[in-house]
Length: 444
View (cartoon, rainbow, N blue to C red):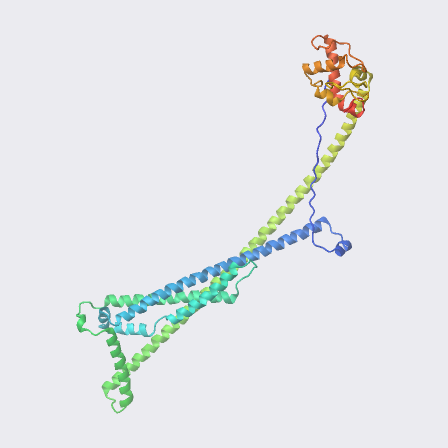
């Protein structure tokens, strides 16, 4: 008899994901929420969270960039202070040094030196004030960076203060570099082949110029028209002309500084506008990318939903077919188990009795043999040893309650026809054993 093949057991696992949205009990009772509404609400919450995270990231980046500029400003202020200290000490040293004597021999160089000393491009007081201002800004920005990310964006006033301070120190550094370069050029061009012991110091020369100027002004005021000699008038005219020239130069320098400050302001405004445009462009790009991801995710979800529905339909149909086939197969086995052929051939096993294979103690009541005991004894193994064990059990003379096979208890001694019958009996027990247990023809 051919062995029957049975379909494997199909297991269907269903995963259900329930998305919950916050709503009160009264709202849920008044208006039912569909899965699509829940999904839309969840998408809205996710988009809001992503937009909020993006705003915080952009604000954090702006804060870091402003903090970096404030740090750079403090570094430039420290460099400016070091340069100014060295420059002013050098000028003080020249007042009494031999190099200063060489410089004093050139009237133009002496005038330029006096102008740089009397009207410095920057003072220590200015540097100290600006350093304190920058330190306060840096501390405020550092506290904002070390705190939690709450989307804090520095105010326009704070940005303007940092930018103004940054461009101020750059401007003063450039002016100081020009003054240092000018002084070095004057020293390089000053005569060196002189007897410095016979030359007055730069301090004496400057004091003399100051005294001469004061005396000339006093004499002009005292003598006035009484001593309006041509020479005196010429000196007064030259002094007035020189004063006018100095005022004109001062006006030019003032306008130049105003223009440079205006240029720096325009540069700062342009840089701020570019930064704002960059931020807006990054935000627009992030929004477009987010919309693309949402659309792509929606398409993938739709495809997965359709595929899940198809798979569920196929699984339900398969389960139905498998159940129908299993029922039909079992009915066939039940009919076969109760057939005369099977009952006659398996009488030594299905007939109630007391003897139990491989047990020294009989059972309490008459009952068919145990399928598990037959299997444990190896009688159901599809081998020569299994057939021999089955033959021994069916012919055991000690079992007085059940009919016995009339074969020799040795598989090697039976005829070919008897061997085929023993194989058939074992095949019935293997294929119909479970059904016979359910039908109580065998015990478990």
